[in-house]
Amino acid sequence: MSSPTLLLRLVCLLLVAIALGGCRSEPRSVEDAAAARPYPLLLISIDGFRHDYFDLADTPALDRLVAGGLKADSLHHAFPTKTFPTHYTLVTGRYPGTHGVVANSMWDPLRDQRFSLGNRDAVGDGYWYQGGEPIWVTAERQGLTAATFFWPGSEARIHRIRPTYWKPYAGETPHAERIDQVLDWLDLPEDSRPDLITLYFSTVDSMGHRHGPRADPVRDAVIDVDSHLDRLLNGLEERELLDSMHIIVVSDHGMSRVDFDQYIMLDEYLDLSRVIVSDWGPAAQIWATDMSAEEIFQALDGAHPRMRVWLRDDIPERYRFGSHHRVPDVLAEADLEWMISNRPYMAGRSRFSLLGMHGWDPALAEMHGMLLIHGPSFAAGSQAPAVRSVDLYALMNHLLALQPAPHEGSLSPFSPYLDAADAITVDTLELICGQQRDTRIKLRRGPRHLAVHDGLHIHVLDQSDPNGLLYAEAGLEVDMRNEPFTVRIDAEVWEDCLPGGSS
Ligand SMILES: [Zn+2]
Image 1 (cartoon, helix red, strand yellow):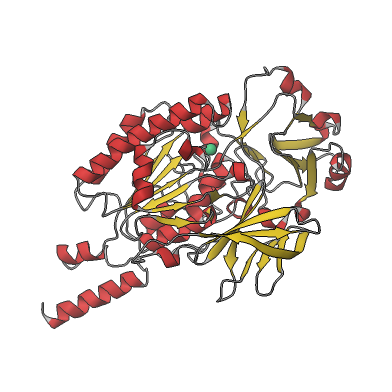
Image 2: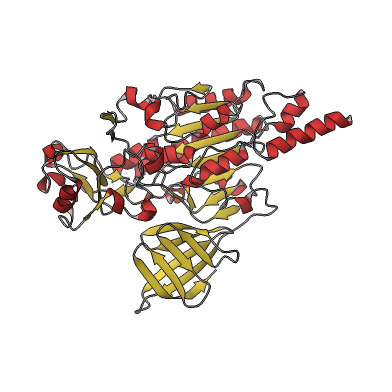
């Protein structure tokens, strides 16, 4: 290699290293192009796959990804834990209160328009998504090629860009057809092959809604999706791609049981003709129209023991649900397994029409999804504590050597895993807190972040000191610099926590 060529290649590699992704558009030779191009990245979503579904059935394909890569205990989503908001957070690294997809059903006060999943015009209208830049737009902007076999937002032109290959959503599309298409895309010639592919399955979620979490039809849906993933992995192996691409498998939320006798009827407390309620269910998004936000709050505050209500500015800090103009004036949230609805709607419902739901506080363990990562940057057998979904955009940008758009996540929890020589595992520390020594808190600690398990909840906190003794996140803190340790979760503070065992 002559020195000018060597210099060119070094400059090119340097450009990639600083994540400008600028080499691919003007390769000097086939060899250089191959050197500069990132490994393909396949992002798979299994809608509604709760983090504890791995033990429901034999899942050889998922097990293969677990054994060969990184498995997180769970995936902590953003509020509300609903399909469109959480999927859009996954691909933009922004919270719903920033990217603006604040629910599956939304009202936009500036346009005086509604968005719902059944409204095809709205779903395909980029206006609703422009508060964030999805990874496929970031990729296309920087000269890579993106393909989406379904993903919320992928049907719309966002910032005037669509994926090179995309499909209008058709839920009945057979799983086999989806797998075939992904393999066909990967078989395309170098100059048209996608660098980023998304793939989506909805059946685990729909069975969870219909029959409740962990019911037999949910298990059957998990087995079915796994069998298709098995064919996908075999196809990748035949192409010698399995170990030279990255595969990230996520789900967008968990699932909780709901009970027909646990509905809170909002119209018992509020004249619904004087407000707009843009979303119902685990949480209601309420707009002041003919009465003030304060009047709505007064009408609902303390109205039902299973419901909490907040004015927009008072929503718990760790929900990070506050700034976008589609965030409602008043938010009411029911307890887990409880729903908010109204009498006219429920009059037409049968007792067994809905047995599972999601949408509550993202810290609730039952709302946590799953995360697996497989590929050359991750050592086989790696483990992580619960991870925040908002951090995956930064990781995907890193893996694709892209310059990320402004986002609210961080690469930091993943950094120690990247190209680590050996598997990284998680240590567990149990704390015993409280005057009666009756509060048990389990800490799952990774190299740069920590998850706090306190009964019903799993919180994720970033390491904020060099020694791994202080961790923080909005509304949360774990301080282990001096014994006894201090744990703060929202307004609750334990200052007397002592280690009760570790492993
Ligand atoms: Zn979903």
